[in-house]
Each structure stands twice: as C-alpha cells, then as structure tokens.
Amino acid sequence: MSEPARDLIGNQRDLFDIPAGVAFLNVATMGPLPIAACEAGQRGLARKLHPWTIPDADFFADTQRLRPLLAKLIGADEAGIAFVPSVSYGLATAARNLALEKGQKILLLADQFPSNVYTWCEHARATGAVIETVAAAGNVSLSDALLDAITPDTGLVACAQVRWTDGARIDLAAVGARCREVGAALVLDLTQSCGAMVFDVDEVKPEFVVTAGYKWLLGPYATGFLYAAPHRRGGTPLEQNWITREGASDFSRLIDYTDAYAPGAERYDMGARSNFALLPALQASVQQILDWGVANIEATLGHQNRALAEALEERGLTTGPESGRGPHYLGALLPQTAPDDLTARLRSENIYVSKRASRLRITPHLFTTQSDIARFLGALDRHLA
Image (cartoon, rainbow, N blue to C red; front, side, top):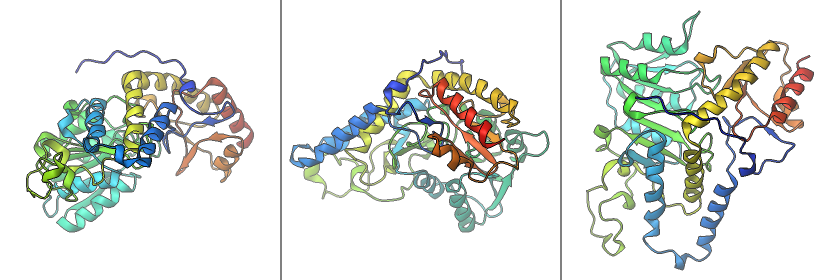
C-alpha cells in the first residue's frame, strides 16, 4: 500500500465551542462535537416535534448516507459496515460468530480496556478456550511481545491499534499477517485510533473491527460501527429486528415475514438504528474528519505531540519512544511524588487531562493552541514541584 500524502492542518478551534480559557487535552476520554455536528443533531432531533412530516424512507436515509463514510475511514467497502451503539455490542456480535476449540488461546493485552476483556473472558468460559495476557518486558515492545505470543494454538487475538492507558502502538499489519499464518482470528477495537491514525482493512485483514464514535471520531455518545470481513457477513446477529430484513423498506409488507436479511453486514445493525438526532451529528463529524484527511490529522497531531513529549521529558516525565506509541497519544509516566489529586488540581484551572494507572494521559487535537500547551506545562511545573 502506498504511503498517503500528509499535510499539516492549521488550528481548527473556530469549528468547536471551546472557550479560550479552556485547555482540553482529553480527547481519549471524550472528543468534543464540532459545532456543525451539534447543529445537525439539533435539527434531526427537532424533526421529532412533527413526526407526521417524517416519511418512511427517512428510516433508511441517514444510514445509507453514513455507511460509506464510515467505510472510508478504514479503507473498507460499505457492505461490511454495521451500526452498533457501543464497543461491547460490536464485540459481542464478533464473539457470537467466532467458534473456538477447547484449549485454544485468546490473546489479550495487559491493561486492555475492560469491554475488550470481559467479552472474551465470557467467550472463553463458553468454549473452553484459555485467556492469555500479553505484557511488554525489558526492551521488548508490547507489539513485539504480542507477535511472539501468537502460536499455532492461538485461536483469537483481541487488541487495539493503541493501548488506551499509555498509547502503546501495535503493529497491526504484522499481527494480522501472523494471525493468518497460524489460522487465528483477529478482532480489533479501534476506538482510540479511528479518525486519528491511518488504518486499512485490506492491509491488516481482521475478522471484525469495532469503533465507538464519541472519542476520536468527535461524534455523539452511543454511536459506533462494526466492520465484518467478507466471509463473516453471513453470521448470526445479536438481535432480530425488522429493519435489517430483506424488503424492510416496504412498510406495507412488513407482516410478510422473511428469514432473508439485507445484504452484507447490515444484518448486524442494532435495533432502532434510525436515530434522527445521533446519526446526522455523527455524519457531520465523520465528514469533517474525512475533509481534513485522517493521514493529515495523524501527521499534525504527531507533529504537535513531538514537541510536547520533548517538553515533558525535560521535566522528567517519560512518554517512551515515538516509534512505540500512537502519534496522537501521550502517556507520561508520573513520579511517585505526584499528588493523587493532580487531575483535579488541573481541572480547577480549566486544564483537562486524565490519569490512567501511573500515567498522565494527554490527548490534544486540532483545536489545541500553543497557549493551551503553555498553560498545561506551567501548571505541571507548579503542581509537581
């Protein structure tokens, strides 16, 4: 795959409702809606004031517009995209459609996000598979440790592109290739990277991908999508709802019950998918990301964070080698003397970051200004002195 062109993007704060005195460096917890996305959602919600004005076709219109945009984010075909309300819903769908044998290994990363752990623990109990947790040790990166752990008795690998606690980066192309060598399924949670890092399903070839929409996609809560590989699109959905059935757009014939589904991964769509408020807002956010270009976002955030990482290192807060983390993600290791209420102290100064384990998680975006960074570093100097 050829390397995409990457151009640095100028500051985009005017597209967001972020006051000048707020330094919001916490997209990994929840990304802010662009103003245009909020307005699109408000217009969509207002339609429900007059439901008699909503034609039957509009139960399908938003998903038809949005499905190809979501596919474009990950280099997929739109037939592989399904709408899900959460990562746990998407992972449960994947688990339902991935058979494992007794004794096969399910590989998870140490400190992986709970939703991408609980699902597989339950699946292991149901199938007799065995959970194995992979951690980095010594000079071996988390990515290399995962590659080393994939053996012929591995049945499934569940991981992310970057780990949520510290941004540790996984070489998914290499992991995907290794999974194919041993016949293991690969299931990915891209919530902490989709929209901020380039990803291509044709390069990685996962069985399933799931992404929540409220972080780096800058969309509303309770939105997300599932990607199913072509050979996984004939499986069993979590729920049986009317709108995913063949011919569902003809309301006059809904009682002509059918076992046939709509084509592609649409069978996995959640019930009540036609959300007139959330889908227009998500569409506006995703369209903005595509207009910026994911490759350009990745390059811009990487450029910003490179300088910020150097400033943190000068203060004794290590973020690890740039090659080992997501370019949009900084996990600064805090000294043992750091106050327990550090994030609360920063929040009192309108500086927003998060703490995960022993690391300060710092995740700015295109709306972050040099003034934001200067205020953050100055506050760190005071509170860590």
